[in-house]
Image (cartoon, rainbow, N blue to C red; front, side, top):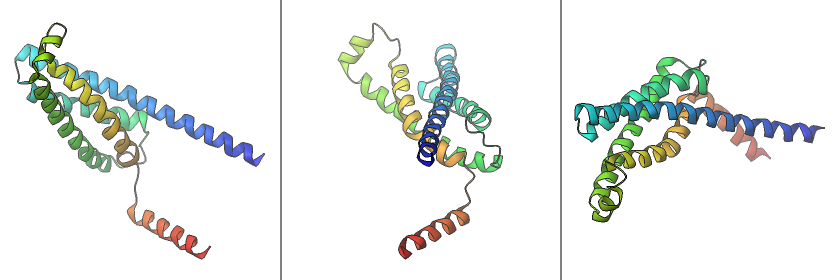
Length: 175
């Protein structure tokens, strides 16, 4: 019976993790939609340079993402909003830098290849949109999700963590 409880507990924990990941991806997709909408509108309707438009879109999308993640995805009501905001600004700043400069670097690299312009020129009006999509997916998975899940929306108590860690290390050495 005890073994069955452990197995079902692991299954529920796995299902919960998958559900959180799924909700985070829905939130990220919605925020990305807002980000892309703002970016493309700025470039196409207002003739803003794509680098500035990418930055502005990332800012607007980040605000949407933080609000949705706080209430719906990670249920971080036990965390102070100011603590979440400060930690989110750190992660979000890294995300904006990675998205903006990643898009710039990939766009410049791709437009420097004549065969890319010739091939994609028939299908894609601006190569920066393809670059933005590729970079956004990579940054979302490898940077945003993990840092938000384990850092931003957690109520960390450094003193309590260190005390718990040191007590567990002490118990390991006594065995």
